[in-house]
Amino acid sequence: MIPATIPAIAARQLKLAGVWLLAGLSLGIFMSTQLDFTLRSVHAHINLLGWATLALTVTCFPLFGPF
Image 1 (cartoon, rainbow, N blue to C red):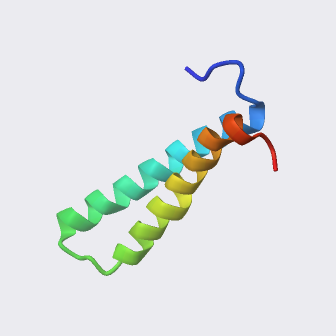
Image 2: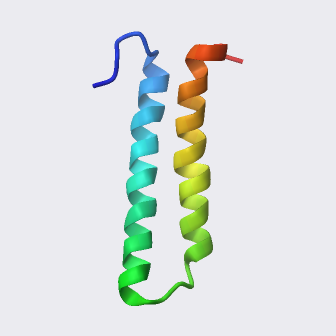
């Protein structure tokens, strides 16, 4: 559960990061079962820009505050 001390926007970003993580994992599993890796750059960008960036901003928000 998300602590109540996290602002509402950070909680939404954390949930959205989880959605991007599931999307990236699903695409990776789909590509590996089909043995067709033509979408590997899409998979990498979903994981890096979607999940990692949102998760990083949510974890840095309590340390540095809003910019």
